Image 1 (cartoon, one colour):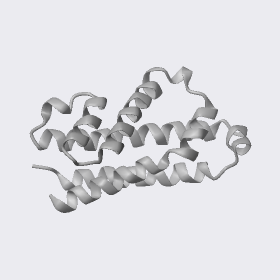
Image 2 (cartoon, rainbow, N blue to C red):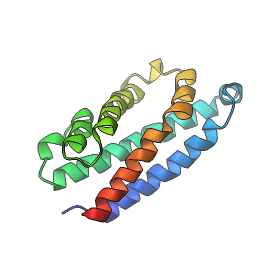
Image 3 (cartoon, rainbow, N blue to C red):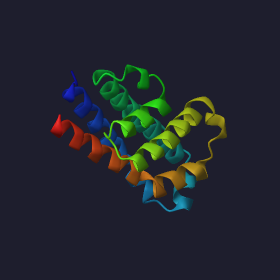
Image 4 (cartoon, rainbow, N blue to C red):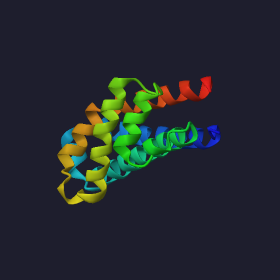
Length: 141
């Protein structure tokens, strides 16, 4: 059975991190790069958001009988799309997010501060769309 409280708790984390990312995204690129704490904070909030997104996806897939789709991040993204929990376009974006999450964790030394700025100024809508999709899913299940 799906634990809606667990999902709601993770969505609260994601929303909190999203607020912090939005604050950072309103800085000019020069302001963002001037203080090394800004990229570090952006990286942390982004990585934690992605972890929570995939925790939610893993839980939903495991509890809806798709345990085989819940073992790796890209499979979670694909499974959520295949089960129409999220739309196919968002599923494809989550696959990219899964790859980026792996870069953040395993190839962190290759992530540039400029890259982080570009992501938080151009790609936060994907996270917002995920939140809306999951909220709709738990309302209907």
